[in-house]
Amino acid sequence: MTNNLTKTILIGLPGVGKTTLSDEIARLAKEKTGIELETVSSDMKFRAVRKDKNHPVTQKFMKENNIPESDFPLLIKTNDFIKKYGEPVFRDLESAVILDMLEHGEFEGKIPNLGGKAMLHEKTAAAFKQNGYQVVYLKADLKTITDHITKDFEAMLDGATITRSPTNGPIMEDLKEKFGDLAEKSPTAFMLERIEKMRSNLQSANPSKNFRKLSIQRQQEANLYKERIKERDRKALEVMTKRHIDGDPLYQNVADKSVFLSGEMKEDIALLCQAIGIEDLSAKAKDNDIYTNSIRSIISGIDEVVPYTYDDERYDFKQYFDPIMEKVPEYHQDREKLGKMEAFKKWELPARISGYELLRRAIEQKKNIYFDHGGQPICHRELLGNVKKMGYETTMFYIDCEPQTAIERVSNRERPFPAERMPERVALVEEQKKIMPQIVDHFIKVDNR
Image 1 (cartoon, rainbow, N blue to C red):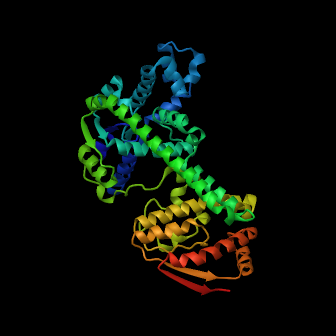
Image 2 (spheres, helix red, strand yellow):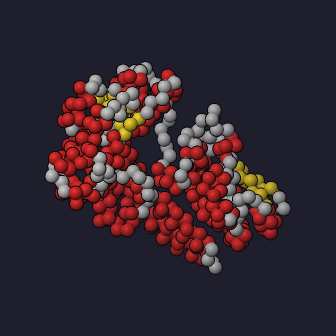
Image 3 (tube, rainbow, N blue to C red):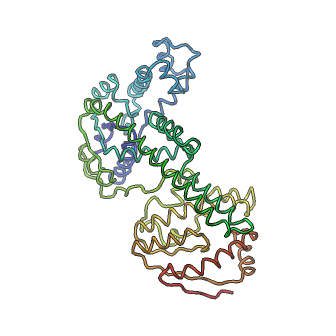
């Protein structure tokens, strides 16, 4: 099994799932055999060599192509280098790096993870074939690939390292032309901005007076943002269609086998195992990752805060519903540096977003849910209405308490709530308790004064 895995190279369009499937199948193989298989990325080595002008491969490449030392910085700026010297020359350097890795045994006993176009280079393909590697061409519906690309695009806007510049560049240019500054705003930034506007309105002297006007304005902003998302997806599909038309015959020519992926993790692992020629490992494959890259970029280590997927053997009830903020190491570090009140203000919104993501996933998987919340957000009316449409029976417990008593109680918490925000909360809760009985199935008042 392991020999087949380490002698297989996956190729295909960016976003088709090469890295995800490689990592998952390596995990499954380790669980099955006890042997840990390392995945080796030629892209990582390629980036490192390009930054090192003293590396033998870099020096030889620059000499053979008559590239002056003054142009060395262009090696790091891919697009600038390609504009001056052309993509074939750039791919020659990529091939030289990979061949050097192959010669020095860096792929031996490991799963190769090559750049998207690496095996399309004649020298690279020939070298791996001579060393007994098989090449599997991963294909997928262009819509599936586009979905992956646009998620990466959002991650890029949030400051993540995934760029896919040959794809994301045209998307960004298209959006800038149509939507200006909005083009560079990620879903996370957009939602945080809307939350901040809502908060500012609620903190104003008479928020209810302007509520209707502001609600219409926010809806107009949301509609424009939805149009931007549609344009982004349309452009991504356009870019990927062209790349597919241009690249499909080349990929097909170099491949030993082809696999058309479904977009479902378990099914694709089964297909891949069959193509590689190993035992089917799909039984314990992870479910599809329904989590968004943009949420990951808000809090480092987010997978430890919100589980990758629900697994009753690994996560118990308490872990599901422990306060999310308390699980974030950076929050505790900020408490030491900034004090508990400032740390709370800094981490409240990221934790809230993560909490809603956890709730969404619980609803999607039809879990029984205990939703502990203050009850003041207007959006909870729509949320509870939608949950009912999905088949849930809803019961709301309204716990009544004097505001001053509540202020005294929260002041003693490890995770505090700013006392100055209590009056606005009281006003909002008073409004909500008049409406919520008409929305939920059961409304129960509990006196806790």
